[in-house]
Image (cartoon, rainbow, N blue to C red):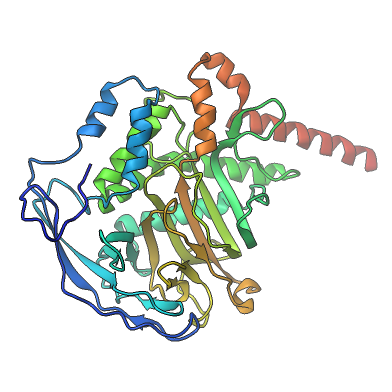
Length: 422
């Protein structure tokens, strides 16, 4: 594990963080202009030969069943600051936004402007000790159509396309408005089933089902990309997620069926992804069912027509990601590109604020958000599956093929009914 930074320590084995003191001047409320928080350089220095990954290496050599010590390792990992960037580098420069004191009321943060090449930032909570990161983020410009920026755009289009055919999640207690949908595996609600992939809307036409099948086949090509993006922010976080998924024998979100030892799944990271849109907002909360130490998310405004990411046309007030305990929020309307974020959703109290009416009712643009997760209830299902045979597992899971068979049966019934009407 990477140690928690200690500014008073002179040990060469510690991660040393050098910062300049920064004062944060807060505005009175979320509708005021953004607070200007200038970025400052952070130098993270480690010896290349000291990787602090002993726990991860030991995990891969043990049995895949999750032991009590491994559970504790996952819990402990949520309390530490991860290594930023690639640990093979002796020196790595980052920029940081520091929250030095709590304001009487919430305020927007003004994010630094971006250049052609994206650059990672970390928001640090300095209101308590030890200093802890709230989130690590990077913004990719809309006008770049190569490299990871283009793959990000394609991933957003794929997730938005798939979400259009999924049933809405309406039982979430934190949901206050907008639409929330899931892709990947989830504890089963079908009769006689323990788990399965999220189900489609009933009554889809054969044409829409065919298009949906095409989008499903694209998912697996993003496995390596998502793993690489998490590693880009924190190699330790990526390795911990992968080790946990393998130990718990959970399927990756992109798998079509529950296959625990799929050789093609070398880049396991998350069991499902939640997609939000159309004026989504919710209550302040912690994702207590989230098992990953760090959750990976993507935010952008998109076209309702073709789901391509694009700049917002809305006023800068209203909609954003709010951290109530810090009285700090990130304004979605002021993000100059696609935001990737790695954050502690299970520890940090957070919520999406209520968007203005013109944003909810807009005909052409909506705000896309997604978070990749490892669900605790699904882990409990996987824990039970460790004790039964693969054949028995298949009988307890509604996988992609079985969902398709159910859809085909519905289509046949519709065709029969229509033939009688005609």
